[in-house]
Image (cartoon, rainbow, N blue to C red):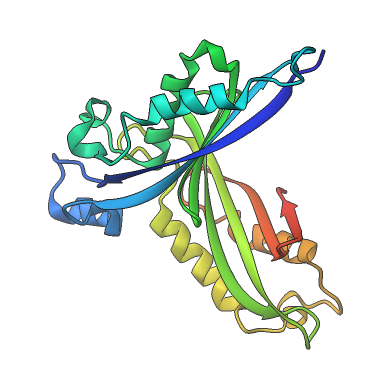
Length: 250
């Protein structure tokens, strides 16, 4: 029987700060930006866990959702309402970035054999940023996705607020704990996408008589792919409405 993927979400709250104590103020500020600000900043994290397994012919389930929730609650109890830098031993020698936190959570959950085979972990800092680790990629590789928004005309008359999700994939830097420089990515998207598209007629921007979300996703990919500072552009998702989105990955 083929495997089925099952995904469960659970929330917890915690605080962190990006800092390398051996670096001076200027270097910490240059590399980590606002994430370096003392003493720390908090997030209501959303942990999304995907497991794979065969459907039990008796229960019709991969795993009982109540059992899965209890395991997840047991794992995140250690992290809930904690300061990652000060309260948890896992981050004494590593920066508690979303990527590194996801790695620790992966290790914890992978040891819980009763939940089946761990396939993917996605950790949301907020609605605009999440890190993802997969069984296929391993613990040293992650994807980071950042959401951006702008308003533009689709056909010269009808305006939309577009959400654009930019995903970058690569090795987790052992020093910074990051796949890519989020500040640099923000500046890149602002310069090559937001300034170009915001409050504009997309037919003029893309120089085409008619435009779809698919055209826009391809345009954004082409605009960004050569400029990502570290890691590699993995996917562009353009959300036109809550019921319609477009993905492009080259």
